[in-house]
Image (cartoon, rainbow, N blue to C red; front, top):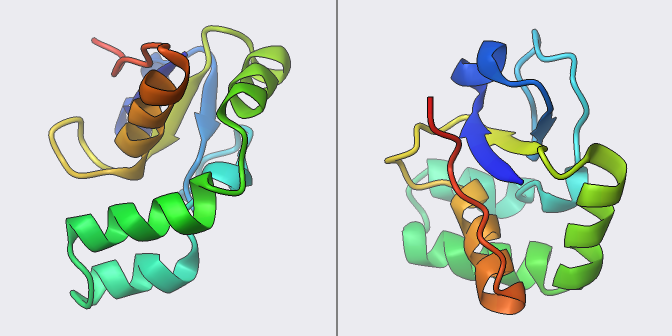
Length: 117
């Protein structure tokens, strides 16, 4: 499992969007359980919460209801071990896919690196 962003889609063989809304041109699979909720996503975009607030809301509203082991195994079983979790931001930008990767690392001791090109 890896992470990346939509701009690199043409280089990916097994993409999986975890965004709240994928680009209109994206026709691949979507895993909505890891997508941010509109409530805190809009608050973040409007400047009402900062990165820390976003992380807190993401953990509380998205990750807390999920079991990391079950979620990881489901992703591997359904999409394969070479699946790449996608969203919009460049690797150096703040992004929820990095929160997911850190969650798997912390909870399962599994590395989910950014795909290198």
